Length: 156
Image (cartoon, rainbow, N blue to C red):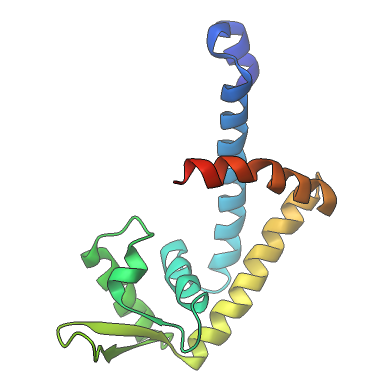
């Protein structure tokens, strides 16, 4: 695609465009790899994301639903459907929110913690192995450091 762009639309063939195209393609390759690994645990990408979000919080790994979907591209109704599925699998519990009687809190069960810890190690390990097929750990670290100013400064 980059070669075709260079030939047919050279005025947009800039270093910035090539960087963006490569970042997008790399993101797609990592996501496809991660999806294959998630499927081994019988969780969808959105279920994985919810469980991982909960696991990344301090014990007891509990959040309000609104805190879960803030960082996700989900409506509250969409999240409710995902939470019902995770609850039926025994990975989460809904508890009353003592601070807000109208709301609830979502907590990982011990089974949920075990599953997501194993899944995260597998998915992340597989993604890293994918990248290490073409770069050393030192090169990956250097690239991560080189991209840091972009993500930190543009995220503000």
